[in-house]
Length: 86
Image (cartoon, rainbow, N blue to C red; front, side):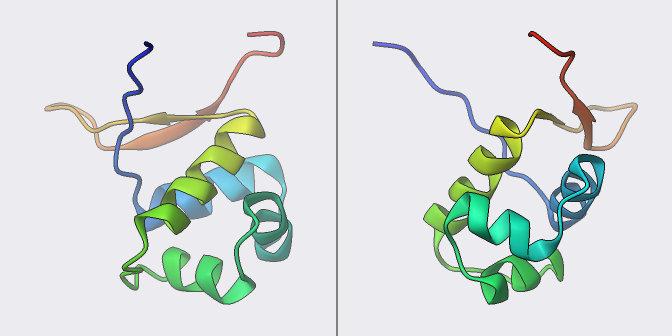
């Protein structure tokens, strides 16, 4: 059984990741199969009680080619695009 490690993504990371991919909020909502309102609320930093919504958004962005970076002592959280083919 493979362990899945998930980091908690922030509103800023969601906005940045979507921008890196060139997606609108509607495109992210469509890819994550969530409502446009849910995406807007997440990006605004308003708490969504459904972890499944955040997970769906994160999964869609990762499938689009985004890599989420967790914060460490020197750097804050971030996002970057995966290399093509990796």
